[in-house]
Length: 190
Image (cartoon, rainbow, N blue to C red; front, side, top):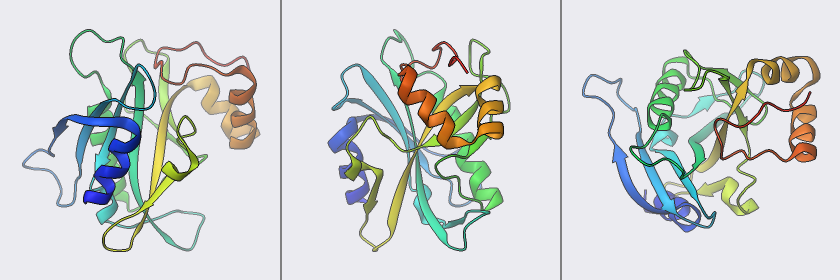
């Protein structure tokens, strides 16, 4: 996996910590790594490492995908790593169990809201805060691995995506330009 680690570290910064799956986890669960001091000033990023090993099918497309999951937040936190390691570990387990990929435009409900209570789902998007070459990487075994950025969203934003579509949601993001590194950001004006 050197290509994958290099790919992450070239944008997200050095790996400062990693969490292995629990001993009783399903075979194939990935690690979750934390990165800091990358290209985005004040950003702390978390990514799965090894999620790509099990290809996943998207329910609407007739092909398989190799994925790694990414979550980013500002580094205002004074202690600990926050909730994203647990969120990524949970979601990686769900994907492994279901065999279904999540891609741009998909919404994944969380079992409980993130701390603060307003962010109840994750939106799967492109990691647009980084260059386009970061969106995917070809690794040692020849697999093309897609990087899926998980953005916390509210119930109202989830309903908007369901009713108007992911493109309308991304248009609203572009117009309103919220701080997507702030998991406690105000809801979009929809």
